[in-house]
Image (cartoon, rainbow over all chains, first blue to last red; front, side, top):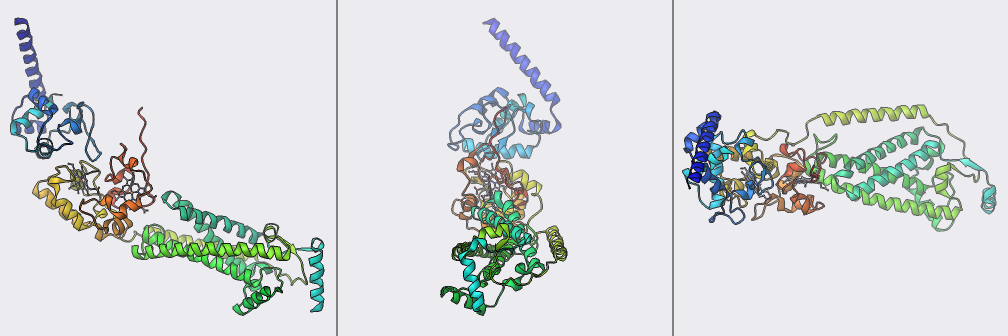
Length: 132
Length: 385
């Protein structure tokens, strides 16, 4: 019991340290995006990204429908074009422009969930994608 | 008169012993078989069609035209039987010859008889007409070649139609020509096709005096004509083609409309179609492709200013002018599917293409909206390394 909570605490500390270290090295564009959306919870973002949602379109029930489950690799649009990897470590240009980030959340949340995403959902997803 | 008839009969009875004389000089024979080969290639590649064979078709066609030019010069500067004066006669003489032939008493000619001469003229006219309509079609409909700067798409299409009819007429003429050769060979028991290879025919009656050829002058004339034609062709090809878009895609358009598929050139659809596309971005073929109002307005203006109506190319005048159905699909218009009917649906679905909308996967110049027939290649699925 104590051992596992100690491990959990250590993991949390490590994760926090990693987030802080990552934030410290974020480009100015990414810092602006994070500042606008607010700090998010990467674990919640990951769960949201991989979950099957209802309310959206039948052929896109999850973010992974186009981005696939390996975010370090390219995905594919419904129109057949490759999508650059989503992992921030593999896509240095991503998440650096708020208007672009908002545009794709608006479009893709509507397609996958049938509604726009909330601010915290977006913050979580961005936190997750920046962490990988 | 009675004497001549007597000689003729003797020769027919003992054909093998008749003296052989040179009738077709080396150039006439080379011309004949080269023209036959280039016309055969041009007809075959033309009727099979398709961009892959177009270059072979054009080379064969240009060669045929050049051969006819050379033969024209030789018709005035060659030896006796090569000269038009030797075999081109008026309609009266031709009809008289035909009457006599039908009555079983055709007049004899060492070179071409009047019907054969008429066939030479008809064949050469057909090849000349094909070259002309071909160049007009190439320039107008495909916006390539020396006339790309001058001929409209509508004229080019009409010329293409005429080109096809003349090609059918040429096939008819060739059939008549072959039938004539066979019949005349049987009638005179002299293999005329072989004579066009060896150059020699049996002498009958008195041979007309020879006329000396002037080969040097002929070569000079032909070289001069070909040089002028080449210069004119090059000059024509340097001029910008009529109504052909050349600008790359607008950067903002390329970014926004190239995110999910290759950005389609504005030239492939009418402004009416683009207005419908832009009005429905929230539900764009099943995707949400919505834009902020400012960007949408700017892109709408760009599409409107560069839509198919503005251009005179095949893609704009055929695909762009086609009426787009309820599904708002350019790639399901009759014009588009007809242009792509030889391509398997699986080719469009395959990974390197990813759908018909990705024109740029196969058309190297899709971004400019030109869609030249010489800029097509279908990518093949790369095998994994």
